[in-house]
Image (cartoon, rainbow, N blue to C red; front, side):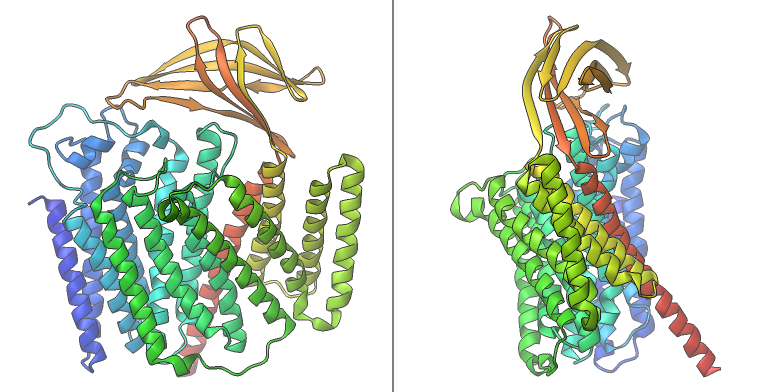
Length: 617
């Protein structure tokens, strides 16, 4: 038995011990020390198993099948490490490791709710561990020792793809915590939001960060001038992020008014199930995607987990239906927050329907389906934001909205006068309207970390909106551009000139770099260096096109090289993408906002602990 596999067996024993001791605690036995020791054992042995797999990659032990498939002798160190989670088995082990960390952190103070939640999280961990011990064993060895590995997919040899999977799986693992506490606390008729809110924020932020990295990777690596293609695997990671966003807004109402309990409970369950559904879509290969793993029967086990979690959520709801009854009156601000939750829910349904349509109806869904629905929903959300932020003081709401409306209308008129673009002018008007609302809403309030996080997230959403509007609706694309050395081609307002090529020999690869000058109105804007990277690998997909981008404040000039003939004629794709920088800036602000809000919660807990200690003294 491989030592890494043995560590997984020990981890499974720790999981079973933790579940048993949690049940014993719920039955009245004082097993708190056993639960904590078992959880620590889960983390320790899972970590040892992970480091064992990492060691096999570092020493390039190609007799391990997983190492053979995702590494080779020429792979740089950073990508040798990232290859650990490049495949199905290693990424599942990383997920189990993250879940083990969350189990230890969320069960430091044990009571009945925590014990029940711990049992639920450990059952999920047992599910993943069982797969690792059976169909997804990363420690299977070949009958011989190959001198060379098959090699990591060249498309994954980027900094973004080194970080993207760990961020995504951290978000996925973190979503288990609010699910478990929602079930456990509801069963004991206690509030769960304060227990799980911080974990929800962290999971939401890292999932968003992972999605952002994936979008940036697609933009700079795949060479099609876009960052989001509504691919099923892309959508599958977006789905739980949307419901988690709705949940984060819903818990505001529950904390302040003890309202929306049932909806928040349902969102916690659905978010976890969408995480598992995303895993099924990615790992089953049942829906065609450039990002999916190969088809395998193991993935259908995830459907069993979805069914069991839904059944558990429904049974607890039936048993504690009276707990969700609440009588209260909402102010306008809470009503507007409910509206934002509804928009997130509608967006989730739209993306889910579009994603599953090829599977259920054997019909394709084009990008226009999503854009015709998601852009209006996004517009409604941004407009709602412009009103919601100032609605905390209803006495000044009308005046504040009038100011925002006047600013937005003026901005839209000016934009139309300058550009004659009606949709762009409408987008600018909405952007300024919401921005003015955010500024007014927070200008007269004391700013702490939580409000700073809200400001960052809301500003980021507004910037993301205008960036998506500009890049999706006004992108200019010029494909099948063929140029020889010294030749020039006109592409819209720009002129491209191919100056020449350069070959760069590297370790197990060489690059063919083109030098393309870009002119506008006769003036040089810059020189782009798109290239083809040819890898000397055992795998067939060894030629990768690398794009080059000139980022200007209001647009990106983007070029990708498709190939070169023996006669020195190169083919290019050229794009002008307006306002795409707003997408990246807005996304970063949204994620930073979530992290700041989480830090505020930690600061509040620290202050509360100090006060409690002083009171006891």
